[in-house]
Image (tube, rainbow, N blue to C red; front, side, top):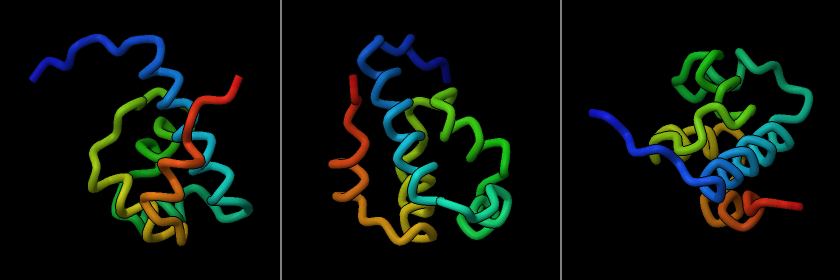
Length: 82
């Protein structure tokens, strides 16, 4: 399946999502959080840096569970900042 090109706004949301997840991870090791969520460390790294701007819902939900975030909190915190 080929995904359509993301708009600048979608890329900004992806970077904001990644920033919020990175902040929630705090001092925990990236690998520890990734494995607990059932994703590879490289996938989590790409999400946190915005290289995966639109991760799958279940990936995000699993990361939220591990990080103690609700989907609603994540959605509120992951809005793009100037």
